[in-house]
Image (cartoon, rainbow, N blue to C red; front, side, top):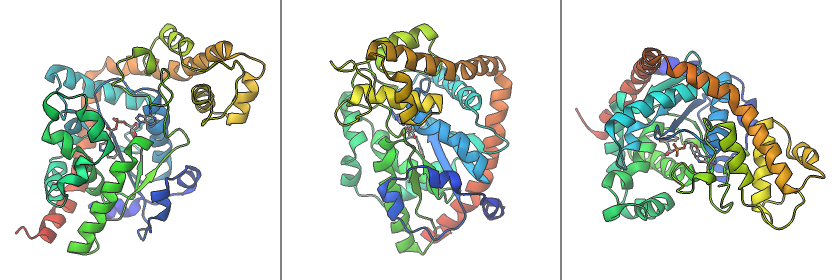
Length: 360
Ligand SMILES: Nc1ncnc2c1ncn2[C@@H]1O[C@H](COP(=O)(O)OC(=O)[C@@H](N)Cc2c[nH]c3ccccc23)[C@@H](O)[C@H]1O
C-alpha cells in the first residue's frame, strides 16, 4: 500500500525548480524519480513571518504539485524543552487551525500529529545508534539551545536532529521544504541516509532541502539574527495572529540604519533590506517592484507600507483561524485521519528497516 501511494507521487516539477535549492541540495545525486515531500513544524507558539515565508507558504504550493506530501505537527520535538501538558494539547490544535487557515488542504497533503505514529520513535532509535556523540554536540542549534537551558539541556534536545532524520526517512522522502536554520540538520539526515544505505543496501533516497528566497527572515530588532518564536524581545517577531496595531508597532520599531532612503543591499543594510524582502514576499512582488513602491519614501514611512502589506496578507488567515478554532472536533478529526494515513505509509517502511537491521 505504501509503495503504491508513493508511486502516485509525481506531478509537475516547475515549482521545485523555481525555488532556490541550497548548495548541498544541488550536489546530491537523486536517482529516485518519484517526489515525496515531507516537512514539520513544532506546535509551540503561533507561527511568525519566518515560519510563514520560509516554510508554510512553500508547503501550500508544493501540495498542489505533488501526489505524496506530508506535513507533521512535531509534538515529540516540542517536549525536548519543558512544556505544560494542557497548553501543549491546545497548541497542537491551534497549530492545526493555523496550517489549515494558511491553505494546507488535507485532501491534497497528509497533515498529522507526529506522536500518533509510533514508527517515528522506533526509526529514531535505530538511527540514534548510528550517530556518534560529537556529531550532535557540534550542531549550531544544540550549542545555541543549551546556552538557554538549565543544567545543560536534556538528552532529547541533543538527539532532536536524529528524530528529525527519522521523520523524513520514514516516508522515504525526497524533498524537504525548510528554512535555512534547518540546513545543518538536513546534512545530518543526508549523511544518515547514505550511511544506512552503505551498511544495509540502497534503501533511503538522499533527501534534498528546498529553500525559498525567504529562507532566513531576520529579526526586526536585530537583523543579524533570524526571526524566532523564542526571541525574548517581543518586538522582534511578527506572529500571524498579531493585531494590526501590534504589527504596526513592531514595524515602527524595526531596527534600520541612519540612511533614510529605501534600498536593497542585504550585506550592507541588513535591516532595511529585510523590510524590502518581507514587503516583496507578502505582497507577491519582485524586489524591484517593492523598491519602486518605496521610492521617495524615508524608512519611517516605508515601515508603515510594509506593515500594511503584512496586515493585508494575514487578515484573511486570521479570520479563518478564529473560525476553525471554534470547531475543536473538526481539528481533532483532521489530525486523526491524517495520522492514520501517515501510519499506513510509515508501518511497512519501518518493518523493512527492522528486517534490514536484523530484527526477526
Ligand atoms: N526566521 C526564519 N526564516 C525562515 N524560515 C524560518 C525561520 N524560522 C523558522 N523557519 C522555518 O519554519 C519551519 C518551522 O520551524 P520550526 O522551528 O518549528 O522547525 C523545527 O523546529 C524543525 N526541527 C521541525 C521538524 C521536525 N522534523 C522535521 C522534518 C523535516 C522538516 C522539519 C522538521 C522550519 O522549516 C524552519 O526552518
